Image (cartoon, rainbow, N blue to C red; front, top):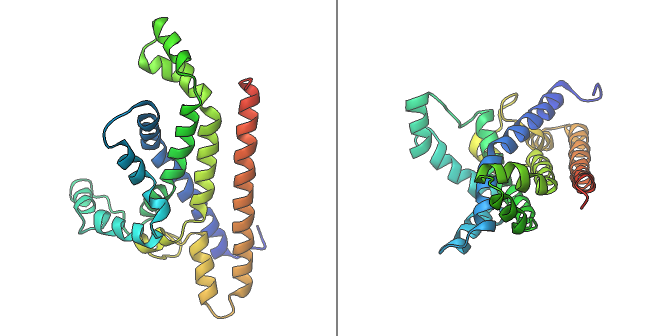
Length: 230
């Protein structure tokens, strides 16, 4: 990594940290929503499904703006968090993780939902008849069978998070060492005189990371399927 400048290394490491946080942040609610959509039939299910996938069709800047008015210091949630817990999300790396989690949430939900729909409900019913409770059935039957999709979804979300730009810059700005992730560093280099070489390095890293994420997600999914005999 000696061929990278200090600011570029900081942006790369910050991107990795924020993407990892975003995956851990969105995984529990994504699992709950995926289970709800895959296992339950209820009025308004189509609307819930549409809302879950809304970040995929909205301009990222619009998502960042909605986060800004909701989680900003003057927003209903952001103001409450600051008053009660002293937590500020705007202009922080935690806020960048939140923005990234919102943008990658549909990716995780979709992967988990497809995995759940491929799990045979008869196996869960058999475990129930043998006396297994809901949590026991989930941990011993459902989760192992949906593991390929779970891992693939997490890796895809992590890879997508590395490239998130619009929502992040709108919600938490472009602060060096705090919110300037890899895409924002690339944007900054393109706007700076003589920054072409830095932009080329950052673009090459972004392409390599994205390709590696796609290949790794597919490799994990196939390997786990072989382990499970599927």
